[in-house]
Image 1: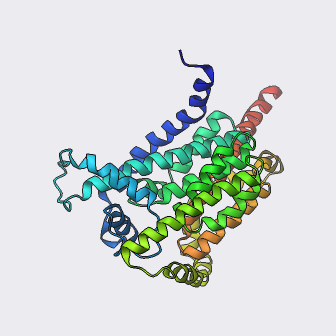
Image 2: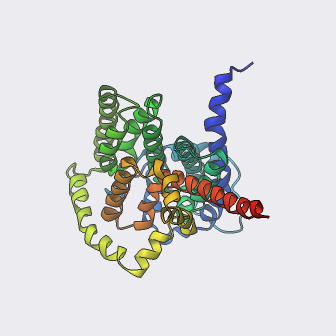
Image 3: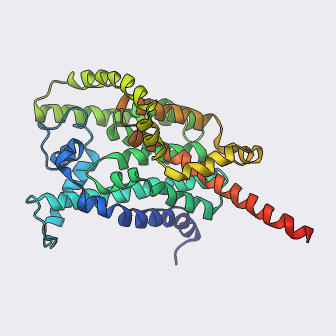
Length: 353
């Protein structure tokens, strides 16, 4: 007979993960199945990394090995299965890698979604509102890309989800801080911009000494990966620094894009019409009161961290989706407020009859 704590933990984590996974496996399948890889440098690069080919990958993506290596390992047993009878030719050996990325990314983004859900619940949202908000956030096209394509965004979104959950949970979430600090440096180089936010707002969950130890392990793993990849590819170690500095040139382009009609449309498309409940709540005093738990310093500074990612990347929509943990909480609270306002308006006339 399983102990009750296990049952409670399963309800808190496994159920939202299963909900997110089920949504992603369905929603991301058309992207996985029909995406045209011919014009996507990112996806081709990660497919090469999964095959152990480092020398033909740009330095920007060369060290993000966790997801590609996991996909490469999973692709080996998948390759022994019969090739899918799709009627369309595929390069030999490529479909197991694509399938492996699809399965791993759906699982990782599902784990990130469970963190989004838990963050919304800790902000005060009801279970139903948090689940509905999670489904809305995962309906974004950026979630479909992250789950369905050979990319590593799912792992970085999981790091953001763990960080936001830890900031919300405080004591008892030290494991989330430790995992984010261990994996973050390997997930993406721009983790350096999230790091100060995590260290400060995660301090209630894990003290300075614990954070320093976890970060030291994460940085040591990153250094080891850089040494190994540079040696395997014959790349100069200083190429990483040169590439990082080059991203500063994207700031002007990103600002110009943000002020254009196309840029505004791309920003709106991150969460689509689901911006509207949050905006409606912000326009009312009682709505702002309902959103008070997510209008604090943690969310404001997280918005700044995401903005830095957007400016340096130039990919406004894709980087803007990193706000998903906080937006899930805000959307869930907005839905709760709208439901309460609707019930109040419905009850008002009935008392007058």
